[in-house]
Length: 457
Ligand code: ZN
Image (cartoon, rainbow, N blue to C red):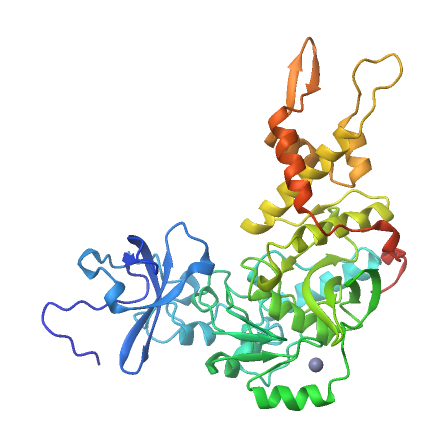
């Protein structure tokens, strides 16, 4: 029972009000997503309107402007499925407890007869179309195994669990801090690590096998017996101190799942498929005398019906803004070149992902255009969209959108022409001079496998 003084207001989840920004940079409207007490003082978890979720944070009451408090509109915050099923309808809508035990998440094993039947039919279909299995949906949180997370003893590998994509629990960061190698990193988003790890101040992660433990002591014990000093799988690229490993999500399931959990801390929409079998993981490392330190990675479907050449892509925060994101993107297209295919990243891209891709596409296409020589008899060089696509392995649609984005296409005397302005060239050369690390195709030792010819991955 909350005892409230006269005139005092109760701030609950779903309420909206202005919050004083951390740097004192004025007030910004935000939604209350959670509430907790630390040393008898209430803290509120807020999401700022129009700001990326990674800026969500716990704030003390002093930073809330309660005079402008707006209560949640009825029926809006309560997930429809929950009504009447989880405790009393008035129990805090969307609170972690109610969501974890709620009915919006169903365990495959507990699936109703009808859905189980559907699953079997799917499997049959899978068999009959052997080689063209349906790929699980990767682009959202639908495959989060929340029950498995809340109950660490529950099996984690039973495939996908259905979770409401905007479950209140997944909207809040749940890991305070991680230690990975020599870095301590503050996570950006929710990741379904076992619940017991969400109450410790630091989650310790072995930087080689990515196993997670709750204390430094546990990590020391683990490191004493962990034999890995690099990711599992094959080292398919090495130049200077940069290496890239290819990991099969079926053969190295543990590593792949640990990688997905780690990545989810920094990716909002994507990842988390406990079923890692249909994916390959390309992990980029920086090597020193201690071992190979993970910098970032991307995952890729073994078979993509939609020409995706990247599912998830991430550069870990300590390595961001150093050119590794673009290096990973460049590498993904290098693989597509070897496969003699064009490819595109899976959508939706994160805000940072889209920026990296836009910039990679612009630079790569501009590079191609600058390298063109006029053919004999022509005053100006000629190239088609298809040719740009073939040369770069960038999917046609992305080539077109990049040319449009750069505003390069002009219609002149009855034909389309590309005009490279002086400003564009200036900024291009400046950007290219910053790209210190590049993929050297000579250092890639890789043969694509034809997964469609294998009965099972
Ligand atoms: Zn380890």
